[in-house]
Image 1: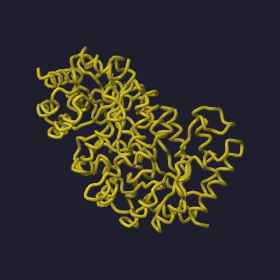
Image 2: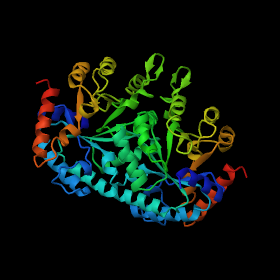
Image 3: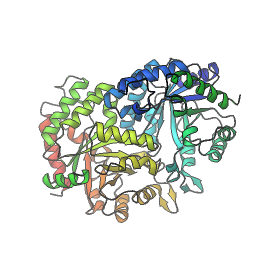
Image 4: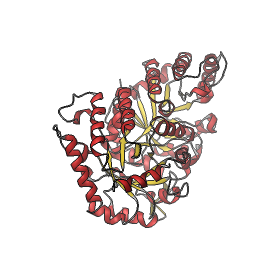
Length: 264
Length: 264
């Protein structure tokens, strides 16, 4: 089954567009865990077990694991292995390099780690993205307008009256179809999200930046209109409680987010 | 000692601006190696031992190791550990993410792997680069105009009559001084390199794309004029021979490249 089909099915099954971001780091683990790299895996497993019926996807931020070196990569591998096979896995790795190098990144993320999708950086252009698209059953989220303050530095420069992130979207959308290629658009820019939806009403969007980064759910939902989207929440869910009830609180926070994202 | 000082000293000591790119992959190892991940480390060690008196830097392309998962990361770690302490190590990882995530990437590359410098992607702007610059003794190469065909897709779009990669250079050069921040400019664009040198005559440039990618050494040297530069060569050196003489041939190829880059 293609990754996109998997997304459609789990969205239906769990009635959810919520993605939980596993941005796990040792210094934020609930107090009952010893502050070790191994504890990250134990924590992630409990978070996954508590939320797997409520989400459509998990987003694994590679940096949070790479910072702990090889042991961290073991936790990353173990975490992905623990995710039920019917849930969409996003490798939030923001990779991109010349062709033969992106090919090696694709091999790592899709074959070694077994993720369904990857976030990729568009700066190096078509041949830096194509090796990811060569996996016809996987999915690529290209960065368009990101959620952070630095998104103002270059993404909004204008060529021919259109911001760079519009050029990224319109040019790259010729490289693959909607079942293989989507975009990252930060929740912190609802007006721009509405404009993006005019260009690509049917592409899957990954929307980070709700919560800690300041994105407003209602504004995002209005802007997105009825387009297919995955809304990510990381810290507000996985660190909902630092006590022994962390898994239960994570589940509650996930349920609340799911309902809010579904306007229920 | 700062990374930049280290570069200046090794450039002087080895009279070289040659960087050897360790883009090692199993299927290209000389025939005498068994085709295993472990052989990559044995091969890299021999390449390093043969060339360490001829180079100013080694560039480690993270993708080539990540494609082999955790065993590949062990080879990456072992390779960096084997590089003499006075040679400049470039982590060619092309990372970049929102602030707290880039911080984790910086920790991985600078603290865990102990690299002197990293290649970073500018698309996400200032707060995605600053966590790397927060390491005052390390060095960051920001992608400006890359060597690949896809560099034409977005890097050359123009705002206010100036290409995006000029904006990247002029804006980011306010974020840190020349002892901490340099740029990647592909050898395949000598005319643009000459223009870049008019904007930033004194910044360190990392110049890939000589050889297999088609960059012309003489044109690059003319364009670069007297600016500080590191010219990378990967496949032409490490795969100079597939026979038992691979290390000797790599040494000869490195010596020839060094002489050419020095116009000797």
